[in-house]
Amino acid sequence: MAIIGIESVIYGVNDVAECTRYFTDFGLPLMDRSATHAHFRLEEGSNVIIRHINDPAIPASSLAGIGVCETIWGVDTQESLDGLIANMQSDRPVNLDADGTAHCLTDEGQAIGFRLYRKKPVASAPDPMISPGRINRLNLHRKWRVKALPKTILHVVFQTSNFEKAWAFYRDRLGFRLSDIQKTFGIFGRADGTNDHHNIYFLNANLPFPGFDGKLRFDHVNFGVEDIDEVMVGANHMQRQGWPRSTWGLGRHRIASSVFMYLPCPAGGQAEYGADSDMLDDNWIPRVWHPLFGFFSFITNIPPFAMDAAPWDVTYAEGYLPTAKPHGAAPAGPEPTVAPHPATADAQ
Image 1: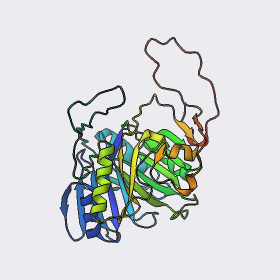
Image 2: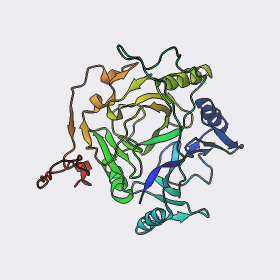
Image 3: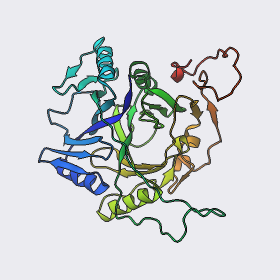
């Protein structure tokens, strides 16, 4: 099988009109709208659907509250789609739409779907950077932007009381790859047909943070933009339109190296502008991170729980070796046997 990314996220919200205005200001291209729904489509072909939380089209699930009530995963071929459907039908009900989209629930009751996805390549042209002793831009301004225009959906995040169980379903049943482990906080995984650092992150719902209550809840979606300038221009535009400011402000995660800006969202959770995230393949060895060391390398507004500098604590996840050998490398001896971390049971 090959899942190649997020084809659609379906939001269940309290106010369709307000959320439509929010995502229009956020920079998503609006395809159509009515009193009961809105449909946005990004340049890569992924979709954002807005419906009222009580709309019959919102699937029943274990999710508490509003937010992304269903994630539709894009699949590369009909053969891959048929394989996923057969896999799911072996132990759970699967509903099929007329267009071939399949819908089911994960082991913890999260609503997911699978659909053939003709993902489109996107074009980006971030401005060259200048640094001391290196001139990459001469007699040329950086771009002047009015607002952000996200091109991709990079990942979706859910709070869950058992993040290892939630991850195990994606690993064992959907073929997702482990990217990184944030100790006690959560697990980052990527679909088998992508190079994104992660397409899903399961966050520990039992952490002692505001809004965390041990229930399965939506947390945020990451929308990909070109660079740090577009992230900040987008945030400024949202503020000018009257939307609440980010609590943490601009930052960069150590895990995934990505620039972030989380904005409060009336559709539930947060909407994230993201840029400059790591890209991975199966030669990547997952890391195990101290949760706060992995959280950020810089951030505008340090949260109280991260005021003390975190120890530089990151190690390789046990049991993982690259799948490919460097060109010209001598044949290796037998691979060592190691005890895997509980979250890495899909290792060699």
